[in-house]
Length: 345
Image (cartoon, rainbow, N blue to C red):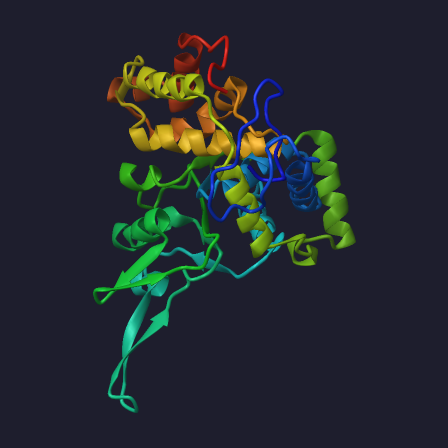
C-alpha cells in the first residue's frame, strides 16, 4: 500500500507487488494524499465559490481516473469548473466546443498523405491531451459523439486500423445544458455509461454569489489559476487510490445496491455491472481522499447517486410522473442493509 494511505487498526494490509506509487506498509502514512487533495480543492475554490462538495466530487472523479459529465442550466459555472480542474493540473488540456458541424476526425485525428515521404502521417486530434473539456457535448451529432466512446473506455484511438494511445492520466470533462434542447442530440445510454459521475453545479447561496462578484471585480478568473500538481503526481495518486483495500462485505454491498436499482419502481433498465465497477472505483478514490487505506459503507452511500443515477433508464410513465434516477438510487440505497462488520478488512 502507498505511503499516502492509512489502514484499519485491526489489520495490516500489505501492498501488492508491482509498480505502486510508493512502498511500505499501509499503516505508515501521514495523510499526504488528503493534503494534496485538499490543495487541489482549495485551488479550484479560488474561482468556484460555495461549491466545495461539487468540487470535491469532481476531483474524486479525476483521481479515480473516470470521466465527468456536468449538467446544469446556463451561467452556473459548468465550463468554469471544467477549466479550473484542467488549470489546476500542470498537464496538457484541450477544449472542444461541440457544434453540429464538428467532425469525428476533429476529435480523434486524421491520416494525411505526405508527398515528401510517400506515405500517410497521423495528425492527432484534440482528444490527445491529459484533460479534455468537451463543452456542450450534446450539440454535436451522434456520429461525432461516438468518436469519444473508444477513447473514454480504452484510452486508445483507432484510425485507419492503427491504435494510438492518449496521454495518461486521461479525463473527459463534458458539459451540457438540460433545458435548451433545440438543435441538440441527447447522449445515448451507452455513452452516458462511460461517465463515472454526473454532477449538477446548482445556484450558489447569497454569500457565495457575492464572492463571485468580488472575484470578478478583482480579476480573479480561471486564467489566473496556477497549477498545484503535475500529471506525474496525479498519476501517483491514481495508483495509490487503486490500492485502497475493499473488504468482501463492501463488494457485496455495492452489488446489492446495483441490483436494487434494477427492480426499483419506475426503472426500465437499472445499473449495469459497469456501474458497480464505477462505484467501487469512486469509493476507493474517496477513501484515499479522506486519508484512509480502506473503503467504508459510507463512502459507497455518499457516491451512489452521482455514480449510478445517470445510468438508469426510467419507464415513460415514471418520466411523466416526474420521477428521477436520483430518487430511484436513493430508495435502492435505503433498501439495502448496511454491513455491520467489514469481515476480511
